[in-house]
Length: 290
Ligand SMILES: NC(=O)c1ccc[n+]([C@@H]2O[C@H](COP(=O)([O-])OP(=O)(O)OC[C@H]3O[C@@H](n4cnc5c(N)ncnc54)[C@H](OP(=O)(O)O)[C@@H]3O)[C@@H](O)[C@H]2O)c1
Image (cartoon, rainbow, N blue to C red; front, side):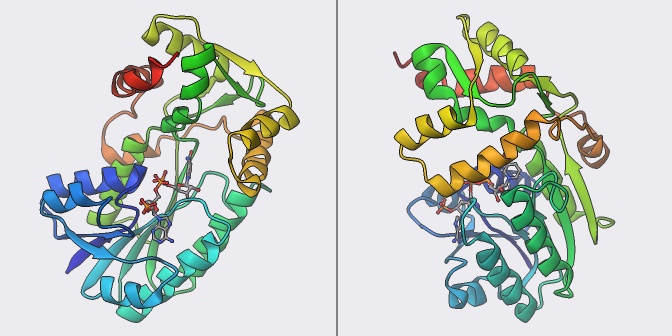
């Protein structure tokens, strides 16, 4: 019986594949584009090609699958698309789904949190056992800010002095692997955060130190941030949803810290200092733009 990993070409799913490969578990990666998944195929990982918008591809991919990790990019049709997966999994007799949700699901009034809660509820009523993983902002989101740090020595947001308990995607993936392979996590929700909450001013200081050059956090109005990012060609629906979430963070909604990562993985979460050193090294070329 296989474990199906969705989003295997993405941030978290890719790291989950690494964890399960290390454990030598029977694994199938659900991918939209075989070319993008060439590295996985080269590692000998079985690929199932498909898309959540094409239920017939799901039926084939889910054959013989006992457990699955459900994740996808934020998308205006995310509720419908992930629900397609849950419906197909139910028909295929999948026993357990680990669903990548978000911190504040069902609590915060923002779009991403509402969508994820709707999907969680769909899963809870499917008869399949579930684990909801609700991470706070991923440290890897710093890739959003890399271009302006490289070009202007600054990054921009609207959260002011509020603190956020950023979490590393590699820790989230480690928890996914635990929940897919160990008993005791059925029908439970875990909020995943880093070990401490820090402000964007502190993030800027840490980047300045790692890059050995000045980096500043600049607080701007939502209107100014939206206008700048629209100019970059980002979709308006996405910017509006993000601004809703940033507004919640500005009010302190991103500050809570949990011990779920340490409890579930038996090791401390990756710190922001450790992340910054790794990120500065792996993105050295991006930071060297002028
Ligand atoms: N960023 C954060 O701070 C944060 C925090 C908490 C929760 N989240 C949640 O995390 C999720 C994103 O996770 P991530 O960072 O791992 O995303 P990611 O790196 O963007 O990867 C998303 C994966 O989903 C696949 N995908 C997209 N549309 C699909 C479809 N229609 N059918 C099948 N697969 C599809 C993508 O395939 P391709 O490679 O072919 O595009 C990719 O492999 C979102 O739901 C978001 O709400 C994010």
